[in-house]
Image (tube, rainbow, N blue to C red; front, side, top):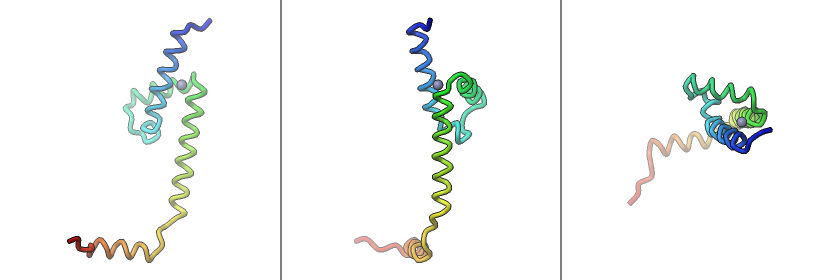
Length: 89
Ligand SMILES: [Zn+2]
C-alpha cells in the first residue's frame, strides 16, 4: 500500500525535476544533479514524457528558426539604423 506521504514526496520530487528540465536539456546542471534527474527518469514515466515533449518542442523551434531567415532588405535596414540611429529630441 502506498502511503499518503509517499505520494506527496514523489510529487515534490517530480516538481523539482520538472523545474530543472530546461537546464538539464541545456546541459547547465552539475553532474550530481544530472545523475539525480536521470535516476528519477528511470522510475517516473510522467517526467520522462515531459522531457521528451520539451526536447521535441526545442527541435521544432530550432527547425522553424532555421527556415525563416530575415529578408535581405530588413537586414540592410537594421544595419543602417545601427550605424545611424534616428536622433531623439
Ligand atoms: Zn517524476
